[in-house]
Length: 297
Image (cartoon, rainbow, N blue to C red; front, side, top):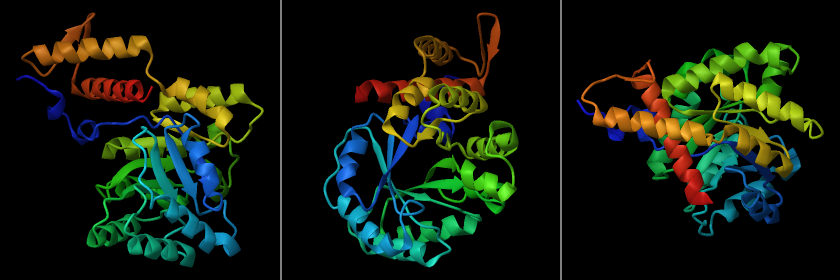
């Protein structure tokens, strides 16, 4: 049988997009949104949660949703809003405002998700309203980590899991460092891979340690992460470089996919190595991301 790109599982057919880096921009400062979009990042997230004081939540919500009343440019940058936790009053108010809007954000980031039912509830509300809004889920609590596999599969709207390392370290009562968080990171990667969605790592908080950030980014890439967050625009270019497929990786992916598509079999041998479907899915992912990056430059 000939294996084509459309024959792959959902993780490929969703046409992966670059999610190498993301940055937050405050909902209270709408004038910073265009600057964030021009920073070179793949994702810009308008912040309504941790970065906004309780007294400013309503103003930030109004300003953030007003941004999406205007038509957004087709510039390859993914736009989303991080709302408040669905289990508190601010989160419920965010959801109500989004459901009331005729121009909702294209995607929402959901913090502190504990159960798949929370995501399903929001999915049902968005579906009833007729919104096509996508979902990105942060795993940053012990309960969320325990239910990560079920959460990742709770909605077809989910495009990515995010690892919330700072809150996770606090919940686990461990140091916010590589070794203590390795199990938690691995579990989130497992859940994302099982659901065929991307997985994105927590930002590196030390702005003066560029080398440390790149080292950690390389480690999470090797672990299976698609990208990593940033807390400052100067971190974006190095992160993009780490998570961008190299010329050799792209060349190899093209060779493998071409060989598969021309072969009448479910596996091939290239350079003496047996290549099967799981590797092929990875190759199509590399090519899809490379194509999108090329289109954006």
